[in-house]
Image (cartoon, rainbow, N blue to C red; front, side, top):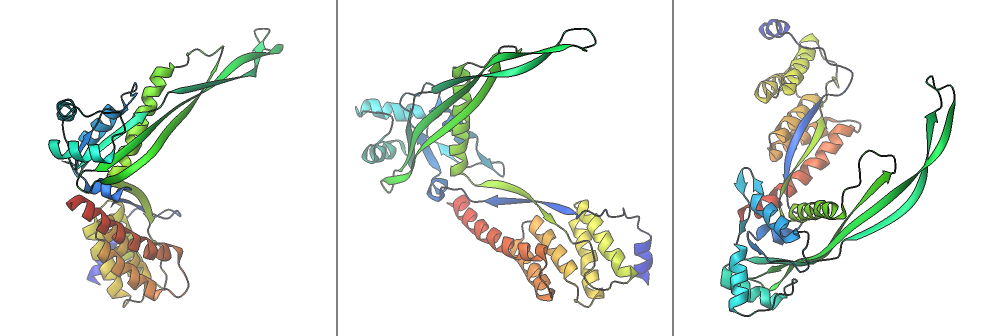
Length: 332
């Protein structure tokens, strides 16, 4: 009775018909596992690098942080250039494995990133667009005319290679490319940007894509809560569910958890809804093993398939696996 009176005294916003969602942030492993585990890197000057791609990659790696801590240690490029000069090693852009091992050992790098940038391409095609213009102030009469337009496709490609100095083999080698399409008509107020400016943008995107492959990153997504009873609830149980979801919406997971546990006890552990919602809370807090336990308890109580429960059951195992791999990359 005391619980009932306490709950009835709480002002709760009435839930809408739409399912309530919780925002989840999950840290996932880098695409290139060995690259992510190789933390001390130097970026060699790329061949034909008129767009500054190697500088952009180096800057991205220098600034990359996970939980406010720098992820990579970048060996100064001046040290690389000095060794190349002193040892009279020819640098053609894409450094071969034996050269990378020799130079890397001398400057104390675990890996060397090198590359060669292709020529910026630009292709134009022309077409016409119909326009309408008024012939009087009230536009009762009008005429049509055509305007000449241009579609410009600008592209950039680069060969990028990452060599493991310690093992003497290639961690990553690929040709990356970026393209963009621009349109402009003769009556447009703004001119097309120059090919050089666009090429710089493409190089920046390419550098970001390459860095993305090397580093763990956060993924953001939403998970549905269950806000309707799956079995017959009395008034107190309905209120427990309602209040718990309101606290979840306010990110008050501690309070929400208390009410959900009360709901589990009140329903004699026969309702899967509070178990599932507890799983969502634990998932949002990054406690995936705990979330998995609650999702399993919910799944065990389900008689017919429930989409949210099935998705959660599969998703949480994937998150556990990815978390383990990410920890290996972070602790290397």
